[in-house]
Image (cartoon, rainbow, N blue to C red):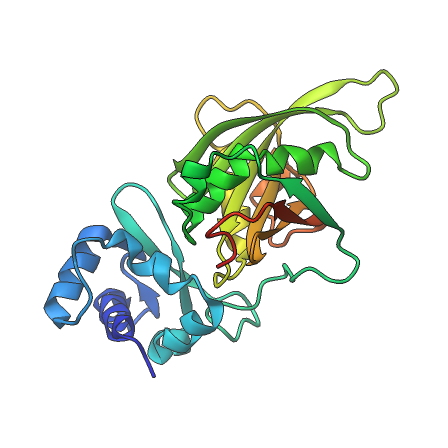
Length: 286
């Protein structure tokens, strides 16, 4: 059964649709336009926080596909989240051969060959653990406090990272939102003199019921390289997904070079592991 958002998205699309040219007058949908449409439809949805309108829609791929307006799909459009300049989301054309508005990601759940590693959580204060929640903000906080990302890079099977520093969490950029951004120093592969280079690392956090979206990770990598003042030429996309009680699946993808970022359409997994937090951390994987 379509959600209350289905009719709202369809109306926003129809307002932009130009039947004579088969195109949109403006693919961008602002937060103000979303709020106004919610109020006009008089649904149970609140117009007070339009930023979550599309973000919540695409958390689960199956639900997003079921609730996407069929008439919009028939006219060859899906959409993607935009997080700046007062924009909520952007209608985008389907790719050649694309049948679903939100196709299955190329990122898979951990298989039997993915190592399971135990990681201590005793260093977390009991007071903070009592406040554990199931949301992404708590997951990012736990990952940062326990240095899960740093541990994963330190144990990389064939790359050598000599330093990994957390720069910022919840980075909102024009084309993407990055849950955590790191600066790492890596020994350049294939050099005998152990030359090093600085690289960026983006991290996306996903809760137990949230799907991994490959295009979201690619957008984060592009946005990170496009940040003002960034001179690094390489970014490593990563994702951390809660998959069970106190278990987090971490995947690091092959590096993206600045010159290749614009034309990138898929990611290649380079290292992966499941981390079990011991003792258990309330909220993670619930």
